[in-house]
Image (cartoon, rainbow, N blue to C red):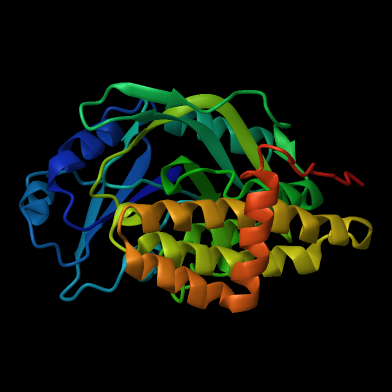
Amino acid sequence: MPKIAIVIPVFNGERYLDECIRSVLGQTMQDFQIIIGDDNSLDGSRSIIARYCDQRMLTHFAHKNIGLFGHLNILLRYVKAPLVHILCQDDVLQKECLENECNFFAAHNDVGLIFCKGTTIDTRGRKILESPLEDMPEVLTSRLSSQLLFYQGCIAGNLSTVCIPLKSIERYGYFNEEYRLAGDYEMWSRISLKSNIGVLHRHRVYVRSHPAQLSKTRHAHIRFLSERNKVFSILLSSMPARIRRRCIIYKRFKHDIMDMHCALIRLLHGDVIDFVQYMNMIGLYGFIVTLILWVCTMNNMLYKPQCRYIYK
């Protein structure tokens, strides 16, 4: 049995796929299984996958496109290793990534998942941004991690930074396929309500930013907000009673105002459809209230709500 499985879902990923696969094969820790699946791509992704002949690699080719999280659920059922690292087709693992993750789980075998820190790169591989280190504890309790996920959003940042025990997937369930964009956020939040989360404070993944990303496709932003708000509702119901009212205020004065600002920017850029979808999503009353708050706080420049955490 390999120590860890790397699951790579692919759809129209020919531009960066070769570099992605080679980053796995070049790991310092070589005891792994690669599961790579093509979700009925329209480009040359399948031919790139077919060039690799490695006995550790298992391939799956879909006959129709089913979407990222449905595709991931199919690939996850082929996993034989106790640990799973999900890697997006655009991203690159640093050489010590898998070794560091296996060592982390050996030291903290009670966590439901871990995430490392990422370095954002552009289309040419140039560094844009690095996630901060030592900004949170190495092990987040279930209570603290769920609060962080509510206040800060998807703290893992990207699918490619996460490593999860297979037993967590079997215990807490696979990805919810009703979510097209925020399925990772929903799953990490679901796990955080029942289990601790680990943080590997090392930059071990290069996360690529480019215009063809799923999250940057037309109208994706508004759908993501709708799905994210569902996760907010789940997390809010789990908040300690002492801070639940403050959480509601925080969402209203932080997340909702940020969403309003993004919607107004899209309107200024002529994207009327996205703006109308945003209005339909929050309703006329919600739109009026949020617009007033956006104006009164000058997009949070005059007032910024404070997070309140309960650790025990």
